[in-house]
Structure formats: C-alpha cells, structure tokens
Length: 309
Image 1 (cartoon, rainbow, N blue to C red):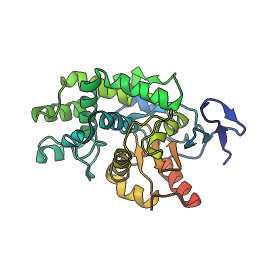
Image 2 (cartoon, one colour):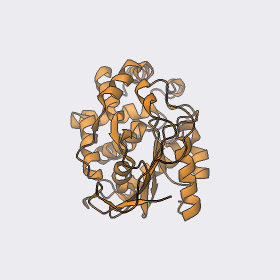
Image 3 (cartoon, rainbow, N blue to C red):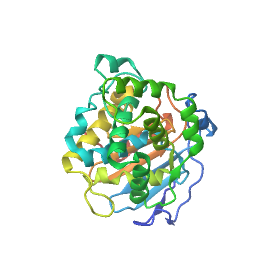
C-alpha cells in the first residue's frame, strides 16, 4: 500500500503519496436503498487520523459515500452531551442479536430499543435530539463539518428520498415506539430527520477526523470538551458490543476495536488515546457490514498490534 498524508488542520491538503484504486470488495449493496446500488462493490478506501488531525489514506480515501448508520454514533454523542444519563432511560445498551431493523424485541421490551445502534434505538436518539435542538439532522451536519474541517459536507437528497420511499419498516418501528410513549415528535417529522441524517455524504478522511473526539476521551478538535471521559467510554463500549449489529462478537474477535458500520459500506473504528480510522468498500455481507472493510481493519490491528485487548 502507498499512503498519502494530510497535515493537521488541513484535511484537504495532501502531502506526497497517491490515491489510486483500492483492493477488492465482495458482497453486494443493500436492495432496500436503491440509490446505494450505483457504487461498484470492489471500490476501496481507508484513512487513519491521528489525535492532532494528521490524516493518512490509501485507495479512494477522499471519495464521499453515504455514511448511513455511522451517523448514529455522532447523534448519540450529541444527545448524551445534552441530557446525560437520562438518555439511557429511553434506549438500552445491550447487544440485540437480531438484524438492525428487527421489530421482534420491541414488543417484549415495551418499546425500549435494545441499543442506540439498531434502527429503533437510533430513531429514539434522533427524536430526543430533535426535541432539544429543533433540527436534529442540521445539528448533526454542523457537528460533522466542524470536526472534519470540511464545510462542504451535505445531505444527499436522492438517498434520503430513496429511503423515504422504501422506509416502511422504519416507519413501523417509530409508530410502535410512539404507541409506548417513547417518541416525542410526529412520526413523519422524525422519519424525515432520520433519513436526512443517514443520507449525509462524507469521505473516509472526513469520518476518521470527525470520530477523533472518541479517541481523545470526549475532547473535540478545537480543544473543547463535548463528553466526559465516562460518556466517551460509554459510546466506545456500545460501539464494541453493538456497532456491527449481530456480527459484533465476530468484529470484536477479528478487529478488537470499537467500531460502527453503515450499509453505505463504511466502518469507523477507534483506538482510544491513539487514532481513529474509517474504511469504505460498498460490498456488504449478509449482516450489513463491509466485507473488505472488516478484512482491512482486521489486517490493520494484526500488523500494528493496536487493540483494546
């Protein structure tokens, strides 16, 4: 691999190296979001961001892609910063053992989602952030722009529209939780915010930089504190145990880092106190995780010895 580097505070300015086509992908795109099917599953990019903002990349590390469920990490952080432990009264912290869009557990658990990274849990977190800010999706976008240093990050309206047109299961989840009093906003408003949140386009470099506050134990890129050390630990723990859905055990076994995947093919990962990573390859396995992305992170931790274990 040849890695390119960008200096701290200037994520768009490269120093040396090249960014050619990456390795093979594998798997396929999610059929329930047709707008994501355009990307070739063999495309690949990966970025590593140090705590000072220096970024190293390989492959298509500057190629924007649909962040999808990766955004759940940042919405959770923004919600936790605003309401603290009260948030955990509305969403759990346990692995689900079921697909990310499953309806099964909600009825058994009285409308309280098992964790904030399955779709039901993310809907609750987005709902509560929207209540406190007036616009959850815009609050999230502003945060990602600031942390990545990229003011051009934006929503992909085509992806949001595609999700809206095929969002019956998410609507069912939201209505079911509303029936238990665990949703504050009208369901159509919540779904609009949620689909816009998931449609944000960002590159591996953008997302690796934006995740840096979790490696810095809650401290943002500008040196201000977003989360307490304990809250940052809570999010990293949730990523490790729930961030790749019902494949979390296998991901922890292979990679050994807190991570969060999205069906756009991206995965972010955190080495607390050291660095953050983002890898992208659109080919997904049957549980919605990037095939080449997991393999690349597995190889990274094997070669570097960087792991939480």
